[in-house]
Image 1 (tube, rainbow, N blue to C red):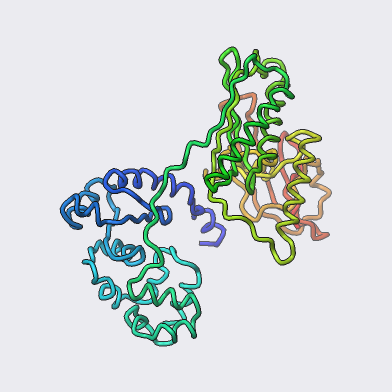
Image 2: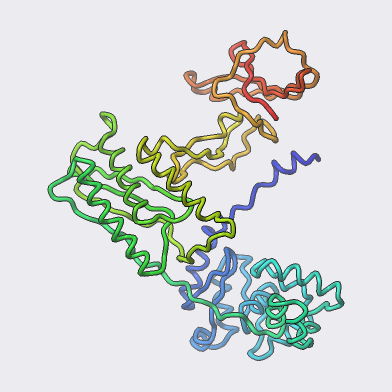
Length: 427
C-alpha cells in the first residue's frame, strides 16, 4: 500500500469533534459531583471528598458513575490528577495516602500519560530510561536537589508527580456569564449611520463586560430584528481577539450589508432590536511582544486589512478556505477576512478527487490547449467524473490528466465538452 493511499484513508484528528462528543459525558458527571474540570477532551477530574461521603464511599461513587456513563468510560480515584488519570486507565481506586506506592512500580513513560503534561516530560522520560531510571519509584528515591540541578524545572515537576504530589488541585468548570448586550431602537432605524451609532455603544459595553470577567472574544454573533418581525443573524470572527473598535466596525459592516442589500434581500422595515452575542470567548492572558517585534507587525497588518475593508467593503479582503471537492478549483472558497467560516469541511471521501500533491497554481479561467501540439514526456491519470447526473442543468462530465512536457512543465489538463484545457500548473 503506497503512502498516498494511507494518507487518504486516515482522516485528521478532529479535536473539536472530540470536545463536542465529550460534553454530554461531562454534563452527566456534573449531575453527581460539583466542580468538574475538563483536562482535555476525553479526560476530566473532580474532587471526591464530598461526593464520596454523600454516596457512602469511593466504591459506591464509582459504581454510580459507571452505570450512568457510556460503555468504555474508565473511572479511577487517587490523590491528584496525574495519579487519578493512571488509576482510571487501570479502573483502580487507590486508598488515601497510598498513591506513592501505587505509582512506584509504573514505568517513567507514564509521565506523558495521555499527553496531558508538557512536551519536556516526554523527552525527560526517554532520558531517564537511558540513564537507568526505569520506574517512578526509582525517580522518587532520588534527592530532589540533585534532580533539580541535573534536569531543571521539568525534572522537579516529574519528581513531584512520582511522589504523588500534584501541581494543582482540580479547578472547577465555571459556567460562563451571560455577556450578551442588546438595545431596542424606538423609533425603528433604517439608516446605517444611526444603527452604527447604537452598535458602537453596544460594542463598548460588551468589551467592558468581557474585561470585567478577564475574557476576550474572538467570535461575535450580530443579531437584528425588524418592525415586521424579520430576524437577521451573522457571525464574525477574528484570528486574534476583537477589540471594542473591531466589534463596532464589524457591526457597522453587517448593518450596512443588511440595510443596503438588493431588493428582496434587505429588510422590509426598520431595525427595532440590535444584539451582540459573544460566541467564542477565552481567558485574557495578555500578549508578550516577540524579540523581533512579531506581535507589532501582526497588529499593523490587522489594522491595514481592517482599513481596506472599511474603505472597500468587507468582501474586498478575503481568506482562502479549503473545502471539499474533486478538482483543485472546487476545493478553495474565499471568505471575507474576519468572517466566520461556515463552509463544510473536507471530511467526505470524494471519489474521483485529484490525489495529492495539489497543484501550485490554479488558473482562474482554464486555458484551451491543443494536445496534438504538446510534447508530453510523462503522464498519469485519468480521473473521470460524472457529477450531478440527476440534475440536467448542473450535470457535467469531466476527465483530468497530469502531464509533464518536454520543457519540464507539469500541468493538470481538464477535458470537458470535447475540449482540453490547462486547469492548473505544478511547480
